Each structure stands twice: as structure tokens, then as C-alpha cells.
Length: 115
Length: 112
Image (cartoon, rainbow over all chains, first blue to last red; front, side, top):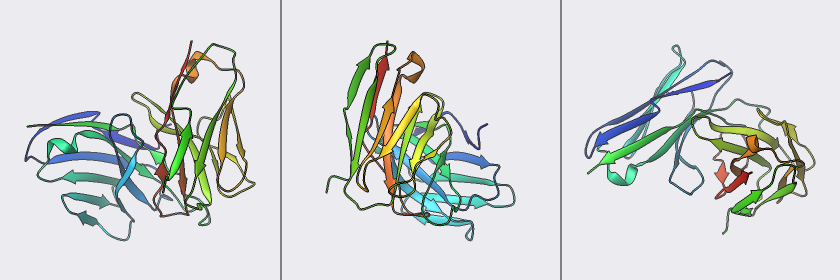
């Protein structure tokens, strides 16, 4: 079963536009929600992360919006640039006693920003 | 600082052959993970190790075994490779919950 559902599968945005990727989860025990960015031929790298005690977190052009009651969270990329073209994964994890960060990933969104 | 290093980067196996994917991290992290990435499926956890000496199954463990050799190294073994194991494999490590997981560059495995 897909514990973290991500949409859309692919996204085309014009340079300067806003990219929005959405994720939904089922397990209310999840308490850590990161977004990872992956370029072709590379491993995923952490972009930004949020915990459920806040509804929004912003880092530069990247913002996570979190809706605990709806069990949804989203990534907004403002002023999208061609260099943002990559695959984006949302993820979630729960506390297993502090020792590990076992991430459950969404299926990914391929973002293409056109010049 | 190398981070997470995986070997090999590419491998082609025949059905039924065995092989071991190697992973080492130099960040003194407690936890290590093996994921596989397939188109449209995202990254799925195969096995993980919360600390040296412990290993646990993830979402898709069938057909795989792992060894946490020491705190630095975590290997993934395919005993009898099948075409369904054609994938890109990523090793990752992290310090604890709520912290960043660092990924290696991946191993592209093809089973023919």
C-alpha cells in the first residue's frame, strides 16, 4: 500500500512561475516530513523538511505548507528556474525511539522548468 | 569528506548470479539504509540498520540479505538475481530521527 501519495507525476512550469507538488499520508504517527531533490545520475538530497508543530516553513524560494487535519503537505517553488528541473520526492517518517530515520517516500514528481 | 560511497556504480548480472553491493559512510552515522528506485514507484526501503549489529526488513526485503559489517559499512547481497531486481539501488545513512538522510550516488543494476 502506498503510505505517501504524491501528485502530479510530472509538471512543466515556465521560468518565473510557481511549481506546486502535493503529498498526502495516512499514518497519523508520522511526525517528520522532508522533501528531497534528485538530479539525473545522482542520489536524492534533502531540500527542506517540516515537523507537524508548524503549518509552514520557508527556505529561500522553497516553502512547505502542512495541513495536519487533512494529512497533506505540499512543496511550493517560487520564481522557478531551469536549474530547479529535477525529480522531487516527498517523504515521511515516525519516531522509532530516536535511533533511526526510516523514510517512506512518495512516487516522485519530475519537474521541468522551461526557459 | 566523501559522505556515502557505493560500489560498484554499474553492474550487469545474469539471472541466478549472486553479487554484493557495498556501501560505506564516513559521517559516523548510527543508521544506514538500502533503497531501490524504480520508475513510477519512488524509493522503496529494502533493509535498514538502526545501529551497528542490528538489521531489519523494510518494505521490499524479499530476495535480499544485508550485513552491517561495522558502523561504517552496510552491504546488500542478492543471492540469486532475478530480472525483477533490475533497478537503481541507493544506500543512505542518518544520525537519528528528524535528521537528514545522506544518499550515495547509486548502483544501476541490470539482471538479464
